[in-house]
Image (cartoon, rainbow, N blue to C red; front, side):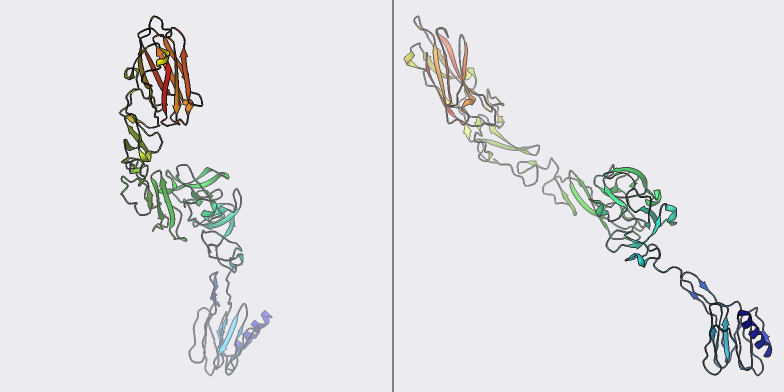
Length: 523
């Protein structure tokens, strides 16, 4: 059929007037018009015809344009047989996949040798936003970027070479996978996180790398190598909770001080936090003109030198240790120590702890700093040389101990200044001493029997009585009733000798109190 059409066309041309040459393109005026046909859908375009020409002759009423030549005929126009249409008087047009001819006006015909349009595969190209696989030319729509609605068209890969672009990297589709997708450069490098979900990217993990003070997002570079990382990062083996992984980490600095990921597609500032023992400061990573997120813009936390100093914007700071060492700001601003202004007490702050110091021989026996050192011991009898003088005694059993020794033995867990003579820090108390001079006599046995009774003692067994003579020392601990008895037979002391009684506490400061006591007996 193709050969027949050519033969008919030659015949028609042979019957008409002179023909126009086919080596160039021209157009005729008057009743005839010639135009090429073509298209461009982005995948390529095809122009129409090899040469276009038009001729007119004396008495001609039409013109013919063909892909190889054009000629005019006085009464008719002919075109390829695949399709034709006419309009007006004697006007016809035809087209096919390989040629087209149209006639307009009065016997005017135009033809092109080829008209085609190619748009390639249907669907969006790699990196375009998508909602489902059907939206993409690759048939793959994945969450290639963080954030809601951040699905993009991707292509499959096993190495970086498959991506064939520095704007994309080959990200494994799961941990340890040998296959993945070509996704856009990541914005999540070093973004602050708590869990993997915070990174919002299937190819990133959240962990605290060496040199970091807090966890950050790190991109898997096991398939793409350095191409997955910014130029100031290194693809390195890191030990993570899920095992050793090849991840992008900043060179020579922690995440907070390094530039972040790429912000050419995601520009929303990323929140970040710097924290230390001095407090916490918040800030952001912002998109810079170089297409990268900045280093964390948070202020480095520094303790405040005074409790009256306000916190800087975005920071919650502690005060420096030296600023929180007063009784009204002890260990923290506004932390007031109890006991300020109370009797016999001095309140200080030492190493962020309140310290109540009792004045000399005064005691916080009720262990309540709120009322200071409420118990006073006005008798300075806490050493043998300072013993309370009870007078002279003889060996008459009926006379008893002269002066009936008695007193109060206070204790506490507080430091004392000035220091109390004889004070024992382990027990929080100082012993009481009493002295008597025994004359004895020719018919005296020089024996003794002495009893200690404790009153209002919460811990009665914590007390001891000792009797010291020229021949030695005898002692006994109080029983559960608070009674201790010390005795010795004939010859326990010399005539005209000193005898001392000592009452002391034996338990630790965990049992502060102030019981009273009496000493009775005979020689």
